[in-house]
Image 1 (cartoon, one colour):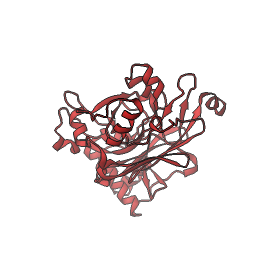
Image 2 (cartoon, one colour; image 1 turned 180 degrees about the horizontal axis):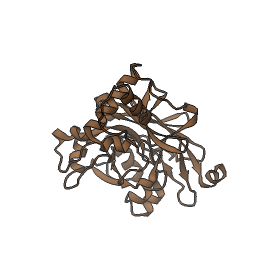
Image 3 (spheres, one colour; image 1 turned 180 degrees about the vertical axis):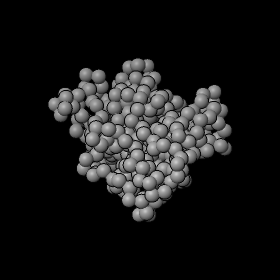
Image 4 (spheres, one colour; image 1 turned 90 degrees about the horizontal axis):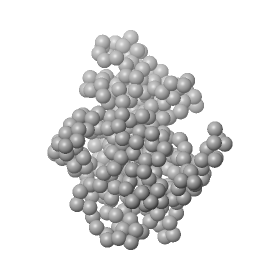
Amino acid sequence: MRLLTYNWEGSPRPGLALDGSKIVDLQGAFVLARREQIIGDGPAAPGSVLGIICGGAETQETCATIAREAAAGRLEAPCPPPTQVTLLAPIPRPLKNVFCVGSNYRAHVTEASRAQKKEDKVPDYPVFFTKPPTAVVGPGGSIRLDPKLSQKMDYEVELGVVIGKAGRDIPAANAIDHVFGFTIINDITARDVQRRHGGQFLKGKGLDTSCPMGPEIVTLDELPNFDQLRISLKVNDEIRQDGNTSSMMFTVPKLLESLSEGMTLEPGDLLATGTPSGVGYAMDPPCFLRDGDSVTCEIEGIGRLQNTVREASSEANAA
């Protein structure tokens, strides 16, 4: 399945993405599928993508059945007019902070070490930090640039992992059993804010709109090669980052094993898995985001996440 959240007539709703551009209204599809006896008297129609994830196997399988029948043309599922909907982040308001990983691609470690004039050393354990739920913004949303706060806003395209099954002390060998699916996350970072707060990550990476996410969550069964995907980012028409998830130093199973040590992961939790090389502050000379820049993240098999940088004054004028 490819799940998304969209705003239609002022209400956020869960949807299925079909044929690249069609959105199926999942709640309406539930009603129709029951009427046509495609599904039985099982779970109620979920009110959100998070509800699908937390609803467990029965809810997820019912949604998958609707997706298959709609894709095959056996269910004339309701589809809102594309021009009348706005895509939101698949989980617009996560229940907890978004977990993130730093320094997980070797080439990025090297460029960061060079830019910061420090030893080029691979971490022995994953470096974890978080972004608050208020940082999340959806496809097409603005990345807020406040020159009074930061002059060095940067980007980082990352594979996002969505947890589907709770667990603590999860062994790497079983970790994939806990994965629901994958999405795209852009780890927007105010580098100067990060540095002036002692180099710790939370403040510089936790600003409002610093976690663009989407456009969809692709379930694990549709993306079994998640560890071999091209991952790239463009600023305007310039490719800045171009890597592959196979270059992760700590694989998704290893990350989940480490993160869950003594810490319970729950359905709907999100983990951004690190970024390849090509970040702005490591360029020579450094090149940071500016008002009006279009930032496009792309991960093979998931899609494109595009956002525009808007200076705080421009943002106010646009509103």
